Amino acid sequence: VRTRVASSLSPWLSECKVGDTHTVAISHGEGRFVASPELIEKLIANGQVATQYVDAEGKPSMDLSVNPNGSVLSIEGITSPDGRVLGKMGHTERYSPFVGKNIYGEKYQPLFANGVKYFK
Image (cartoon, rainbow, N blue to C red; front, side, top):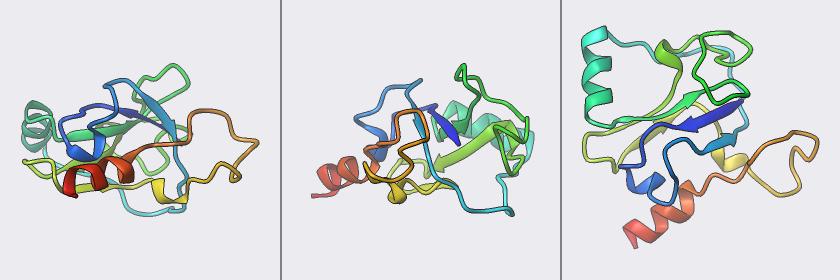
């Protein structure tokens, strides 16, 4: 799937820019992010919506071909209020320069390098 960085306030996303897109492996058919409208507003206001599922133009979408689990507001990842805890659906850890060579898009998402730099 294609994801877009929605907030870079978390140390995990510190080297990313809002709007950066990454192609991330998924392997789930169940589970999705669901929250009340009030909680969604709070997460957005706090910069806790880290990443969203997006289409080829980088726009969040509820289309199942883009947002395969139907997460509310196409949310793929959120953080704790201080940004140190990141929860996301896609499998960034499955990146390798030799995996998915036939899949287009930027596949390297520097979450782990950013985390090591911050927590070191």
